[in-house]
Image 1 (cartoon, rainbow, N blue to C red):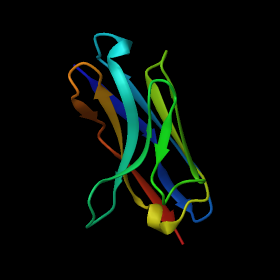
Image 2: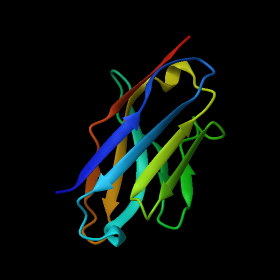
Image 3: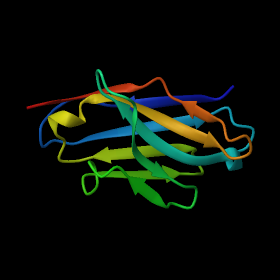
Image 4: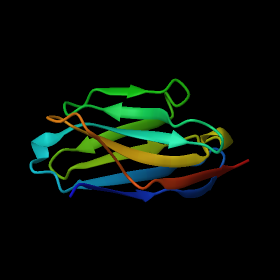
Length: 119
Protein backbone atom coordinates (compact mmCIF):
# COMPACT_ATOMS: atom_id res chain seq x y z
CA UNK A 1 0.00 0.00 0.00
CA UNK A 2 1.08 3.54 -0.66
CA UNK A 3 2.79 5.35 2.18
CA UNK A 4 4.15 8.86 2.44
CA UNK A 5 6.53 9.39 5.33
CA UNK A 6 7.56 12.92 6.20
CA UNK A 7 10.58 13.91 8.23
CA UNK A 8 12.02 17.17 9.40
CA UNK A 9 10.09 20.02 10.91
CA UNK A 10 10.31 21.15 14.48
CA UNK A 11 10.76 24.43 16.32
CA UNK A 12 12.82 27.31 14.96
CA UNK A 13 13.15 31.02 15.63
CA UNK A 14 11.92 33.55 13.12
CA UNK A 15 14.46 34.04 10.37
CA UNK A 16 15.71 30.50 10.68
CA UNK A 17 15.56 27.56 8.31
CA UNK A 18 14.11 24.07 8.28
CA UNK A 19 14.06 21.24 5.79
CA UNK A 20 11.30 18.73 5.20
CA UNK A 21 11.56 15.44 3.37
CA UNK A 22 8.91 13.01 2.18
CA UNK A 23 9.53 9.45 1.04
CA UNK A 24 6.90 7.79 -1.12
CA UNK A 25 6.61 4.02 -1.22
CA UNK A 26 4.17 1.34 -2.30
CA UNK A 27 3.54 2.58 -5.83
CA UNK A 28 3.50 -0.17 -8.47
CA UNK A 29 5.96 1.85 -10.49
CA UNK A 30 7.90 5.02 -9.84
CA UNK A 31 6.37 6.28 -13.06
CA UNK A 32 2.99 6.29 -11.34
CA UNK A 33 4.18 9.17 -9.17
CA UNK A 34 2.95 12.40 -10.66
CA UNK A 35 3.11 15.85 -9.13
CA UNK A 36 4.43 15.98 -5.58
CA UNK A 37 3.60 18.81 -3.28
CA UNK A 38 3.51 20.31 0.15
CA UNK A 39 0.45 21.69 1.86
CA UNK A 40 0.02 23.21 5.29
CA UNK A 41 -2.75 23.76 7.76
CA UNK A 42 -2.59 26.24 10.58
CA UNK A 43 -4.98 26.07 13.55
CA UNK A 44 -8.42 27.30 12.58
CA UNK A 45 -7.51 27.61 8.93
CA UNK A 46 -8.04 25.56 5.82
CA UNK A 47 -5.31 23.45 4.31
CA UNK A 48 -3.43 25.41 1.67
CA UNK A 49 -0.96 24.66 -1.06
CA UNK A 50 2.61 25.64 -0.26
CA UNK A 51 4.56 24.25 -3.21
CA UNK A 52 4.18 21.69 -5.95
CA UNK A 53 6.63 20.12 -8.36
CA UNK A 54 5.99 18.10 -11.50
CA UNK A 55 7.93 15.02 -12.56
CA UNK A 56 9.86 17.24 -14.91
CA UNK A 57 10.79 19.68 -12.17
CA UNK A 58 8.37 22.51 -12.89
CA UNK A 59 7.45 24.24 -9.65
CA UNK A 60 4.70 26.43 -8.36
CA UNK A 61 4.61 28.23 -5.03
CA UNK A 62 2.11 30.05 -2.89
CA UNK A 63 2.72 33.77 -3.04
CA UNK A 64 3.38 33.84 0.69
CA UNK A 65 6.44 31.60 0.39
CA UNK A 66 7.92 32.65 -2.95
CA UNK A 67 11.58 33.52 -2.61
CA UNK A 68 11.84 31.79 0.77
CA UNK A 69 10.87 28.17 0.16
CA UNK A 70 12.27 25.79 -2.43
CA UNK A 71 10.90 22.40 -3.36
CA UNK A 72 12.78 19.68 -5.19
CA UNK A 73 12.37 16.00 -5.91
CA UNK A 74 14.40 12.91 -6.62
CA UNK A 75 12.43 10.68 -8.97
CA UNK A 76 14.88 7.80 -8.57
CA UNK A 77 14.33 7.81 -4.81
CA UNK A 78 10.64 8.78 -4.94
CA UNK A 79 11.29 11.66 -2.60
CA UNK A 80 10.27 15.28 -2.40
CA UNK A 81 11.89 18.00 -0.33
CA UNK A 82 11.00 21.42 0.99
CA UNK A 83 13.72 23.84 2.04
CA UNK A 84 12.27 26.65 4.11
CA UNK A 85 14.35 29.77 4.72
CA UNK A 86 13.62 33.09 6.39
CA UNK A 87 10.82 31.47 8.33
CA UNK A 88 8.12 33.64 9.84
CA UNK A 89 5.72 32.97 12.73
CA UNK A 90 2.89 32.82 10.20
CA UNK A 91 4.56 29.78 8.62
CA UNK A 92 3.62 27.83 11.76
CA UNK A 93 1.43 24.92 10.70
CA UNK A 94 1.26 21.21 10.15
CA UNK A 95 2.91 20.48 6.82
CA UNK A 96 1.63 17.62 4.68
CA UNK A 97 3.26 15.83 1.79
CA UNK A 98 1.00 15.12 -1.18
CA UNK A 99 1.52 12.82 -4.15
CA UNK A 100 -0.77 12.50 -7.13
CA UNK A 101 -1.08 9.09 -8.82
CA UNK A 102 -0.60 9.68 -12.55
CA UNK A 103 -3.01 7.01 -13.80
CA UNK A 104 -5.81 7.14 -11.26
CA UNK A 105 -5.52 10.80 -10.33
CA UNK A 106 -5.86 9.87 -6.68
CA UNK A 107 -4.16 12.07 -4.11
CA UNK A 108 -2.16 10.48 -1.33
CA UNK A 109 -1.25 12.31 1.88
CA UNK A 110 1.40 11.99 4.52
CA UNK A 111 0.64 12.08 8.22
CA UNK A 112 1.88 15.65 8.60
CA UNK A 113 4.77 17.19 10.46
CA UNK A 114 4.62 20.17 12.77
CA UNK A 115 6.57 23.31 11.97
CA UNK A 116 6.60 25.98 14.66
CA UNK A 117 8.27 29.35 14.19
CA UNK A 118 8.72 31.44 17.30
CA UNK A 119 8.94 35.22 17.20
